[in-house]
Length: 144
Image (cartoon, rainbow, N blue to C red):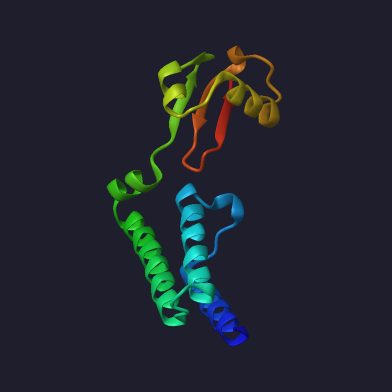
């Protein structure tokens, strides 16, 4: 069991090093789900019924290779990039919240104002020229 654990650890370590580095704040929802799936595949390799390290390695390698391939495609194709990570979305213009866009993004006025207070020290929606929901899920505030 110890040898199996060391083998899985080393393989996952090397594969994640090869796939590139991101901080926790930079991972997307899909990256998080992928990590959960990799964790499940790793668990199956460690404790699953078939006790197959090879099976776990193949699954993990496949998932990480797919993730790297999608990232490479994003760099080459704007369309793929938009499909995978979406585009920034303006949710407030000249102090007026765009309700349909806020609803689509599952945001409310309080979310926008919280970010406006934190980053710009603003107190009212009317002080916001633009609020943009960025690709990474943060809200950028451009004051008037």
